[in-house]
Image 1 (tube, protein in one colour):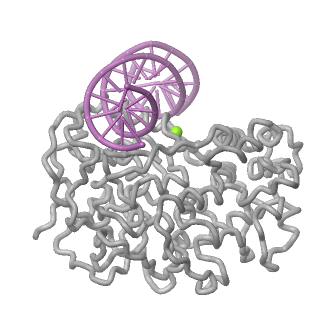
Image 2 (tube, rainbow, N blue to C red; image 1 turned 90 degrees about the vertical axis):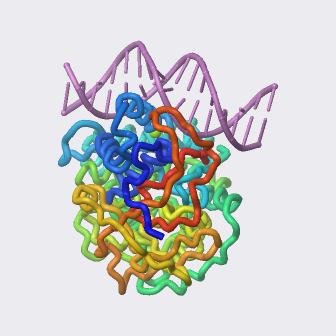
Image 3 (cartoon, rainbow, N blue to C red; image 1 turned 180 degrees about the vertical axis):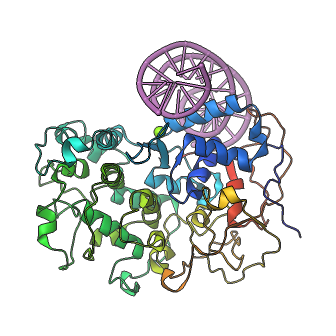
Length: 452
DNA sequence: TGTTGTTTAGTGAAAA
DNA sequence: TTTTCACTAAACAACA
Ligand SMILES: [Mg+2]
C-alpha cells in the first residue's frame, strides 16, 4: 500500500495537540530546542492546516508553552542574540506521551512547586551568569538562595513527585510494564557507563559534578579524582545543583542532583560560555545511574544543546543498546510510528521490519534546521502492537546521523477544517497499522494529550 | 511596533 | 457528578 506523503493531512486538522506539535518541533530539532518562531515554522511547514488562522493557534501555542511545565524556557546564549528564548522539553516530559506515541499523553506534566522554583532559580542565574560563574569562589549569597530557601529542599523532598532520578524511576515503574534490566556490565566501550551517561558524566565533570554530597549520587568509580568534587571551577553552581545540600544527614537525598538541576547547570555553563578545556574527562560511574530509568537517559539528549563544546560526538546522545533496552517508559512500544523513541533516534531492531515502500525526502529546510533523526534504515519497526523490547544499535559501528531523514505520512482520517475546533475524539487513536516512518513523526502527534 | 511570554477566564469533551 | 484536559480569547508586560 502506498504510503502517504508528508503533508497528507492537507487541510485537515492533524490529530495532535499543541503540546504534541510543540514537542515534535523540539524533538526533531537537532539541538532539541527551538525558538517560538522555529516551532511556528515547523508546524506550518508540516501541517497545512495551521497555515491559516495563525493568530488563533499561535496564541494557544504560546499559552501552552508558558502554562505547561513540560516546556522549559532556556535563555539565549550571548553568542546567539535574537528575539525570544529557546524552548525545550523538561527531561521527564519524554515519558509524558503514552507508549512513546505523540497521540497520547499519560497525564498532565506538572512539576512540584518547590522543584519548579528550584529549577527556575537555577535558570534565572543564566540571565546573569557572570555574576557568579566568573568568580572563582564567589559568596554563595546569590545561588545559595535556592538552597537556603526553606521552601525548596525539604518540600521538594516531600513532594509527591520530586523531580529526581529516583522519583522518575518510581513514577515510571507504575506506568510501564516491567522490562528486564540489562546488566550494566554488558555495556561496551565505556566501562560500566552507558554512552549517554558518559556524556552525562562529562557534563557533570565540567559542571563540577559529581556532586558535593557523595551520598547523593554514588560515584563509585575510583577514576574520578577527588579534586573534581572539591576544586570545582564553578563552585557557585553548587547550590543550583544541590539545593538539598542542607538536608539533615538523616535524610540522605537519594539521587540528586535531579535532572532539572543538570538542565539548569548545563544551560548556565553554556550560556556563560565558560566551558573549560576538556581533554580527558574521567570516566565517572555514578552508580545511581544504573537505576535511572531509560526515560531519564533518553531525556538527557535534551542536554545536547548545551554540549556543543563537549568532547562528544553526536552519537553520544544516543542511548547505548543496553541502556535503552530496558526502557521503563516503554519507548519501544508505541502504537504510532511517530514514537518518542524514534524521534530520539533510537533504532529499533524489530525482528520483522516491514519494508519501507515510499518515502519522501525532507525538504531542505527540514534537513538542516529541522532535522529529523531517523536511524531506521531498514524502514522497519512500527510493529507497535507488540511490546517488543527495543534494541538500540550500538552507535560505535553505525552511522546514525548519516542517513537522511525520510518522512512518509500515514493515512489519516478525515477531520474537519477549522483550526480551533477538534472534530475528533481525543481518545480515538489515529489509524494504526499504518507504516509511518520516523520523519513523519512530525506528523503524528496527538491531540489527546492526557498529560502526565 | 510587532513579537514573545505570562496570566486569567471561560468552554466543551472526556475521564475518573 | 466532579475532575481533568485541550483549547480559545484576551489583557498585559517585556523586549528587539
Ligand atoms: Mg512552561
